[in-house]
Amino acid sequence: MAISPMHHRVLIVGGGSAGISVAARLRRAGVDDVAMIEPAQTHYYQPLWTLVGGGCAPAAESARPESSVMPKGIAWIKDSAEQVDADSQVVTTASGVRVGYDYLVMCPGIQLDWGKVAGMADALATPAVSSNYTYDLAPKTWERIRSLRRGTAVFTMPAGPIKCAGAPQKITYLAADYWRQQDVLGDIRVVLVLPTPAMFGVKVFSDELERVVAHYGIEVHKNSELVEVDADGRQAVIADNSADTKDAIGYDFMHVVPPQSAPDWVKATDLADPASPAGYVEIDKHTLQHTRYPNVYALGDAGSSPNSKTGAAIRKQATVVATNLQATMGDTTPTARYDGYASCPLTTAQDKMLLAEFDYSMQPAPSIPFIDTTKERKDMWYLKRYGLPALYWNLMLTGRA
Ligand SMILES: Cc1cc2nc3c(=O)[nH]c(=O)nc-3n(C[C@H](O)[C@H](O)[C@H](O)COP(=O)(O)OP(=O)(O)OC[C@H]3O[C@@H](n4cnc5c(N)ncnc54)[C@H](O)[C@@H]3O)c2cc1C
Image 1: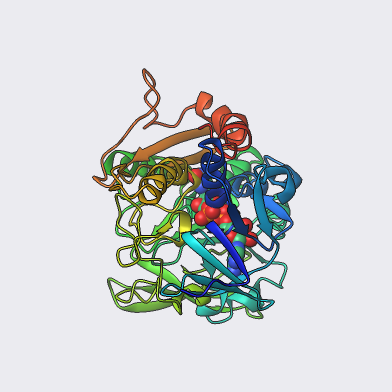
Image 2: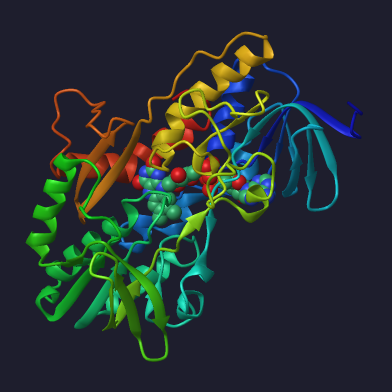
């Protein structure tokens, strides 16, 4: 194998939640010569964007300089990865630099496919439509929720895996609770559009969420998705996939969540799962090692493991990847296993939350003893607002959680 001009023993692509967590763990374990390709100057704690949209936190609190979270001793390549040649073990960046590696960790996150729903991208430029899925738009969500006094508010979730599948519902409940407090909920038709047949994939949480939507009087359209937006006419076209029908709903405010898939450049690499059009990096769901290239691992939103795509999942995955990668580097079999754990802190009111924790078995997997987190609770709200961000910045990103 020809040595590329630049070469590192371990190369990490993406310095988001997953990349920084793994890098910190590898450095703590004494692994040398670790480089990271990451173009962004700012690191975001995206789970806060739900609270920003709900008027419960300032956006700026979710952002810190990337340099402040980059672990010491990591060679930061400030560029975007654009191609991977897994046979030659080289990643090429947008500016044409070729970076060779012995071991590769892929975690460049997920792509927001705004263009997949006709009219959605254009609608975001109008005052009535917003999304918590970007840092810039989350404050607009709150502006619109705060100013709405009557009319129809539509909240949508797309089909297919997305990051934080609970986020489309969380903002619905935060908005409904705010309108209840303002005594205008009775004048607002709140419509929640879900692609799934149930409120949640785990029955105990689904039952609790049925109770929450009944409490607010939210009209839920299951097995349904947004397929077109007429921004000028403020009409949302909703397809009911079980009845095979389409209906237009006029809206005064709409919160949209885009369909999502692996970044296009990842789909085009040898690392992508050839059987899946979503193109995620094809890994074993337990060891997180690539199924065809043993010197490659992936985790986070870009990996093909069928867990719920959340930061909580990454907290567990990072340990498994760091442990198994070191085993591979030492020519031993990777034995650490990820069990699919994910958690979703579902904000059900401006001061209440239920913590849905589950794994590949789709059974509850509680991690907090003596507390029933399957029901909405006030103490859990403080965990979401203050506890989890502190855990993220201080422990997870430093390789200690
Ligand atoms: C509104 C919202 C609410 C959420 N709520 C929760 C929650 O309550 N709980 C929870 O656990 N999770 C939640 N999540 C999900 C969580 O934020 C993600 O699952 C997590 O950030 C994924 O981490 P990642 O490292 O895979 O991707 P990211 O954190 O998105 O990081 C990807 C990184 O890769 C970089 N990158 C992109 N392209 C390239 C390239 N070509 N080359 C190199 N680097 C590149 C990016 O700049 C970025 O730094 C939420 C997400 C959103 C949007």
